[in-house]
Length: 263
Image 1 (spheres, rainbow, N blue to C red):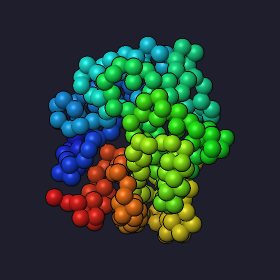
Image 2: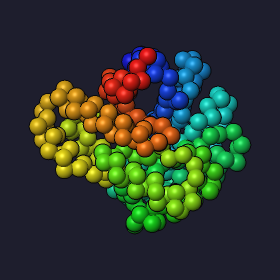
Image 3: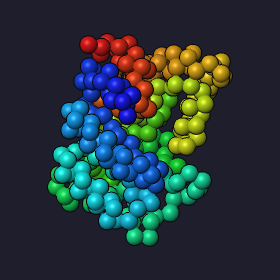
Image 4: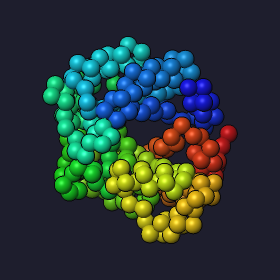
């Protein structure tokens, strides 16, 4: 806990719009996540976005979480379906729970309090049959009340540009914010991309092969790659960048400093 707050302190000087607090698979860290979001917002005084999922819990537990967030003044929310528990291959809705993230968007919107983000998938959601269906569902989430889209990680900006263009053509008018993961180690990036079915481009793969057992060099390369991605995205006029820093500030600090955003 202390280490988490120290990392937040290091990143505060860059004046981020918010810090996001994740939610464990199947809500496994539900109470801890809600408590930490409260501490970040009301003890540390930093704007906080709480992840909330519908997987593995009945509707009333989801509604209880929403009421807690509202009571604590945490109005930034990212509404997610959530991943199946470890060892479970396919998502199965709780018999008394919401089925999809759009259901959570509608529930939160009805409370007339939250600013709602939803997830976008530049390389298509792993459970979606195709890109067209994926874009249609994104539009449905926005029509239900989402205010912004935050994308899954990607390592080739062309995926993001193509996705954003298709979303705009489908009538999605809210900001679409790219999600960037600075690589910390080769095992880490292989694990993450396997989970979300993201592509490791061949040029990135060639570099990673040099750092299979060298996390320090992999992290340096990750900083370089993320810096180049962000510079290109900012030049293209993205509304912001969401960093997946995984409670470790060094790489994100380095990227922001490389971009001339250090204070």
